[in-house]
Amino acid sequence: MRFIFILLIAATTGCGKNSGGGGNPTPPPSTVDTPKPTADTPIFKGADVSWITQMEASNYKFYNSSGVQQECMQLLQSLGMNSIRLRVWVNPSDGWCSTADLIAKAVRAKALGMRIMIDFHYSDVWADPAHQTKPAAWTSYDFTTLTNTVNTYTKTVLDSLKAHGVVPSWVQIGNETNDGMLWPDGRASTNMANFAALVSSGARAVKAVNDSIKVIVHISNGYNNSLFRWMFDGLQANNTQYDIIGMSLYPTASNWSSYNDSCFANMKDMVTRYNKSVMITEVGMAADQPAACQSFLTDLIHKVKAVPNGKGLGVFYWEPEAYNWQGYGLGAFDNSGKPTAALNAFHN
Image 1 (cartoon, rainbow, N blue to C red):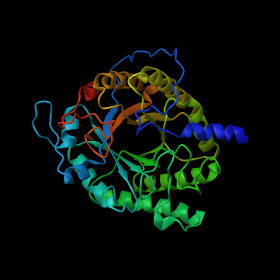
Image 2 (cartoon, helix red, strand yellow; image 1 turned 90 degrees about the vertical axis):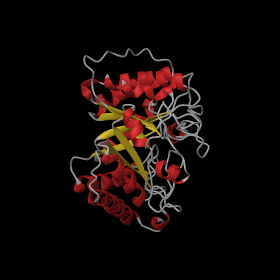
Image 3 (tube, rainbow, N blue to C red; image 1 turned 180 degrees about the vertical axis):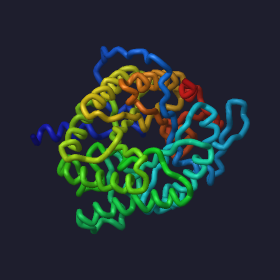
């Protein structure tokens, strides 16, 4: 069992967001055929634009293909997106992605008539497969207090959004929780029951605010079926409350086709195995490969639409508006602040 866990933990690292997927093992070639949808199945198409207020404060501007300056969310909407994803940190040192910053962005998205996803990191900083650090204010809590705090904090943030007229369509309980969250207490490889309890505590808070909000559990490497089976078998064994399985996918220009085939097979397996809907809550590819990225996204959107029984719900690009920004190279805008051809895929 120890050897099995080592293999599983190795599979949780390296979501590829910083490297364009180059750190991930290439999945084996897939022979899975993608059936044509019988109709133009509508899905949710969107972007995580959590950097937007910080970029604007640094005097970044955004332009349509004609060079006309536009507000970024409205520009993305004109490109076929209908949803916005926003992360929230507990006590970020610089204030960005705090509850107040989250509300400011969510109000803007709602004013455009866009659906909203809230991504709780349950940290003061980035949470991802390699980092699930407790907020500084929570470090001394015992597990019971930690579980209760997840509930009260989640409800407080959502109640604050509601007071500003925003009820999100979806809420993620944790971000890329390949090995749980709020380490060490909620580390799934050492205590799956604890991670399940934290997820369910957050989910109860979501449903207490509005029962129509769908709860997402999100892990990376959407092509990795063994990782997903390990995680969601564990959550199922602990009667965890959630509605949707969320995935990240960060391929390169050379391997996106095999990634998409493996991800499609994984999505279908999740639907069959757990009777849950699936959603690609993060995608990205190197910004200097717009043609390949457009092909990748067009194919992935098609595959999500083809998930049986309408259980493929959507595709969200992660921070497409980021250009010349904090060294991030997987956006979908060029250096002049215009969207690249990659985003043409969202017109499909």
